[in-house]
Picture 1 (cartoon, rainbow, N blue to C red):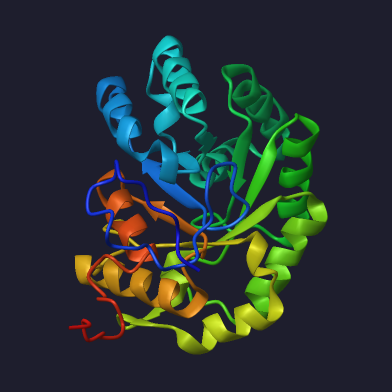
Picture 2 (spheres, rainbow, N blue to C red):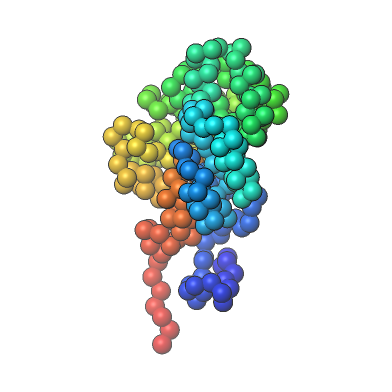
Length: 274
């Protein structure tokens, strides 16, 4: 399938030959962008270019606590104006759970909803959750009117495919809409964990799975590791693989990668007709 081009587009003679989901709202080929504290002006500039290819924006860790309420709600509303869905990263929920217990979950989720968030992530990256705690947190968020993005896997310990699948099923059964797979689980000594990814493909509904990329928050990570993992995921699962933890400055390149116009090359050579 060839994506249609327009005479108003630059280099319109170059077809975009990969099958790629089109206009939002997309059900596949999702790109989640990280927001570590983008000032409103930069956020507005980035979205002017990136909004058509960004579906989700994560307020990383507890950064949403540091803004004034007016500034935070302006950021949330700006994302929504561009049809990008903002949500709170799971490590903020982990912090609240670890320091205040399950009793604090409902007030926290109600505050997120009041501020304008429609979704939240429930994870156990650094604070372990057993099945009961995970289900309780997800159900509490759903009861407050929030969509839940569950996350499975650890930043520090290797988790088997069976464990990740079981955790994902717990998330889905409790009401999560999608599940993110921790990026640190997807590499072994800098190489894609092919066996794990193969087992996940067999045991999970890939349409409801978003693969996280790694980044400098993981000790020992190099830029080439991020690119190699991203290239592998697109190659293995196709241009409409769901990807998370993409930095703003890498979103455009990620879209180019999805349509074979990035650093991987075209994959085959053609001889021009004479």
